[in-house]
Length: 557
Image (cartoon, rainbow, N blue to C red):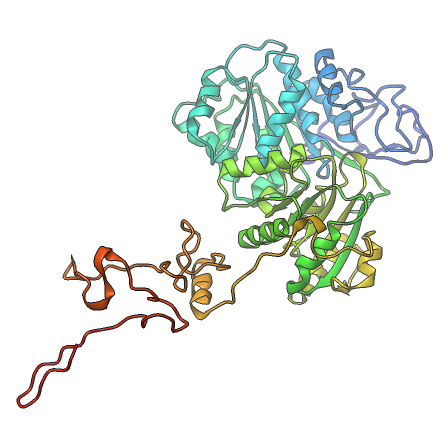
């Protein structure tokens, strides 16, 4: 087949028009395949009778008609996965033929099965033990999600899939490798770590996949990817998937892939933002955001909701606030250990929690089909981050709502995002929790308040003292009802009776016994010690001893 410049053989852009169903082989059809001038003849994956659906823009094909083994077709059907998405319809036939692929599609379009089904079918129904396929992903959350999808597809065959990522104990992951896992899904750091310990061998890898390659570039994993490629055989089948194609990714493809085919699945009726997502942008005050969010969470038809914050502290604070207001929220951010993050994600997916508060660390690993709302508590850094955040909703052809709060200081960021995505909303509407348009825009009941009726009374917070302010500023700890000693076994801080922090005095590295009224028998403080209201004895009394002078008497103790 003739080559085009740059080492990439041909670029195919599938564009779906909606006037009516057409046969792909019909050159008069509005379903238009763009081919380079040197290419003659039909594409190898085009089949007579392949129909484009006017309703969804998807190929009206089953996985069986694409050539997928029946056991995997049955496994997908048990989970309600029947009809492939466009990116799957294009990549699966070529992947089954062993063709190197660059797949480009927006998030939530089903790229995992686009490479996962050919990968599993290549290994067979009962592969020999040992790593035969490697899938590299940028984040832990995405690693878990991809591994789960592959386990679903391979549930009727003997293939073993292992998820290898950081933040988790080595022992369990090493045990999976020793048990003969044939497919490894992992993050670059942990993969290289195990490879350096000779616990992971990549010399027999037959299929290698890079998922979310643009994100790996953003996270600085490019050199790690090159090291992983160097440990695999040159004659491997390679598939690369990415939402965007920056220059370094193209260079990586030219270096490590064998004449790959570049496939893009786009719809001319959709802009850069998905048409099935309603985008709402508000200019909101930081002190009113919690109230606004509480009302949005009571909107008609609201299902699972993802709220993105800029910082870990903001996420932790918001999840506490929403739970206090009666909502059922969980958080995923960098201050949580991996086990806590996995528990939160599992609770969200199972429906035990219907609100997930996350930083951008989880933006690409949340693959839940029934997310109805995405709320940007703070504006994303750029338009790419915006697309990845709001892409958590409106998946699998469903509709969704994306709400973004823009602070007064972040108006310049929004202007850049609005211009890059051509959203037509240069001036966000100034919005408060009492604004009438908030209720009408998002179908919020008129009687919705900031707290659910089932939440009970709000938590009582003690007035902030100077000491509490210093404590909060230093450690960021919640000072409600607790001073510096708060949070440790019910301590009441400095102001509570008997709850102060005791200090031991030293002199020359040796402890000094307390004297005078600072100690009593049994080591207890006198009643009223440490109080600020003047009750009881004084907070601390000191015995002063002056050197006697001639003609004077020492003062009474």
